[in-house]
Length: 99
Image (cartoon, rainbow, N blue to C red; front, side, top):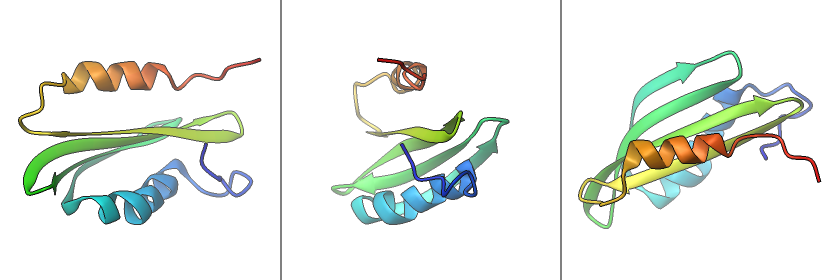
């Protein structure tokens, strides 16, 4: 979960903070290609490179009640991973759970 500062930080702010503090450190040539806001979250799509190879990725942050959770996926262009199917699976995991 992300620290929402008592609900004061938007999902867009949380996504941008994650990009600045983590993705831009781990990846090279980061370029945001899309930014989509919904009622319950934010989605940022990007291209970047890792190890000299280019790829694409996405960061999705959703507000679930009083918390915000997110997923990120980055895949190199030559990756055999089915990007859209994998992202759908990850997004389906953003559900509240009760013990």
